[in-house]
Image (cartoon, rainbow, N blue to C red):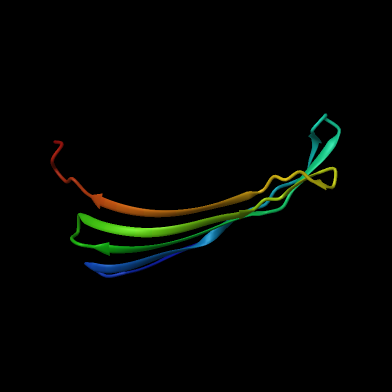
Length: 99
């Protein structure tokens, strides 16, 4: 789900409320007779953007990825999703320069 609050020029807040991935059981894991179970993985993002003009803007953002713990035959195998991301973006639209 995503939402965006914006004006013609100026500040804009883009909020991505998140993403979830659900996994089924894998009964052919490991040696072929083991069961791999994985908890859901979650992603959250937010973005703050400033529009200088219609063709130029700058943004900062943050993303978090977490969850996904894996168990092989009921034992936690020390594998999970854990990542964070910060970003700075600059966009320049080149209109009509490549005709």
